[in-house]
Amino acid sequence: MQDPSRLFRILLLVAVLLIALNLRPALASVGPLVEDIRAATGLSSSRLGLLTTLPLLAFGVISTLTPLLTRRFGIGRTLVGAMGLLAAGAALRGTDSLVALFAGTLLVGIAIALGNVLLPTLTKRNFAARSGLVTSLYSSVMGLGAALAAGVSVPLAVDLGLGWRGSLAVWAAPAALACIAWIPLAPRFARSPAGRSFAAAVRHLGGSKLAWSVALFMGLQSMTFYVVLAWLPAILISRGADASHAGWMLSLSQAMGILGSLILPTWAGRYAGQRGFVLILTGMEIASLVGLMIGNPFWSPLWVSLIGFVLGGSFGLALLFIVVRAHHTETATELSGMAQSIGYSIAACGPPIFGALFDYRGDWLWAFLFLLMVAAVKLAAGLAAGTNALLDPADA
Image (cartoon, rainbow, N blue to C red; front, side, top):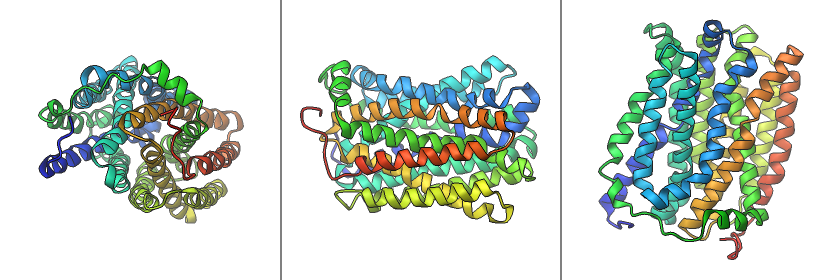
């Protein structure tokens, strides 16, 4: 049950931010190490893309099941299990086995999917009056985790001598810490009410154009985010940068994403509709993609910073849509599950398509044209999702 005490809310917010900190490092740490992984394993670009795609596929499947888990175990215990699974998956990737690399990546994806769905639910349930601020805080902390992982992956592997496997396995430690921190909080969250069946929820939400718009916006912004996460270092390395510099450029992108995540949801949450924010972010995204496509190294930090800010802001906006378009907590959980299931299933196509286009062409032109097309479709979905409306009561 919901505890109204101020101390509990403070402790809960800290615990939420600790979960958020763990939801990106296991993914962001792969990109800077991709050439080391390629050299050690002989994997092609499209198969290396699976290291990003597998978690996204897990996001798509597990997001649909999360409401069932919260009804069986409660939100708190589900998050304890998720962080334990994340620690196990990260540790497994540190073993000397190609099978373990992909199996650990799949476990990491399952764990992160649970956290992705439940953070908006916790926000709606415990911080509804300050949903914009709390969404900004935890989405920016997610960006902080990604920036940290992107920046230190190569130094951990090279300077500390951990190798790429050890560098990936390091992120088991903060996940284990989050697991331990949530154990005393978990009993404070009762199981979610039985409510309607999951099949009924999907059927009702699936008939809502607004729900589909939120899901498509979530998916398309995630597609571009994970393409950048997976391939930005390889793009820069192909243009003469060394691996360490490319990793820090990815870190810069993620750091600017923190700023976008911090500013946009808080600002946009003050308004009934968010269509203007969608227009501004799309214009900035197109400009940054064109800049990166042209490929002048002198301007790379600018375009890397801009795309990071846009993607961080877009992600925070997608999370805000889940909260402000839903009537109540259970609807927010169902909408979050639908949006992230459909969204991440769409996003999973991005990294392998981007890599395959490079393999086919031998340069990045068609790959960037693909992202520009994604931006155009995302604009249409975002304008619909950002309208001043709530899910129809029949759907919620």
